[in-house]
Image 1 (cartoon, rainbow, N blue to C red):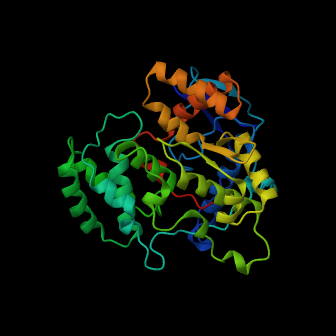
Image 2 (cartoon, rainbow, N blue to C red):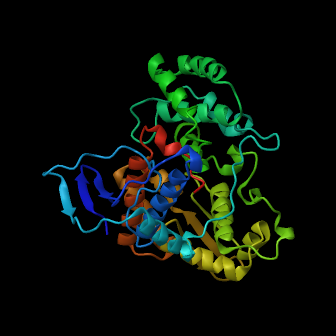
Length: 368
């Protein structure tokens, strides 16, 4: 249980107070920082598995609100633990199925592939219509992402500033020069490695073309990200199948085409996943609210799959009347109740608006 829960205009903040301070020292290679991040991530995952609306992308060491008499919803001074107790708890969580993470590594800048060479970078660079008052994402997000690509590609900060100054000048409503410098400096602060592909995809679908898919944006696709090739391994862990499948769905769907019809054998052949593992992945991702799927029998049948985030992005540009028709159509396609479809997509839209607002901290790549 948290020590304190504080209410804000857009949600709640949970405070977990330590009994004693955990000291950061250079002699230990600043290990306590990495351990604290892992504990923070495990706390989020723990509550997320119960379908609580946890913000999984906010900075682990961000600034929180000051508790006051008028905003504290819950407080128990007995809910205070030592750092050692948290570490022990966190290590136990790592054994759970929902916390197993794939063996990922950063793609940018490796083997001659650089983020500034990928299609998405040039698509954003050639888009001048980006504005700052957009409720989903705006100029700061785009500039920050472009700067991160330069940083991850080994480009000097002064060269990046020169290039993005020219880009900023081409915008319909450019950033002020001080804001531009501040955003680039943040990208080069050393706190970040690269922008998440999910965020890049949303930016490009928002400002460039809503029909863009991952295969249009990235040089290297999702299921080639592992350090060892599949034929050199005796078995693939479930978490890796899960990541491969998500990468596949992101590549094959977009905001204008948010779901696809495909035979299960085509999926198993493309990403090399056993059919039984695929069934398990489908059930888990649907229970987490990340996808929806249904089966159609017969010769022309197969599985119909949709990415919830693509459905939500597609929904955001529709009128209220068009949304009602959209909900009804999805209810028929996926065999889910109208109320469930409405609740799931409206929640996803609100999460996108809140999480992907103009804040550079959303683009921290947490390899956790």
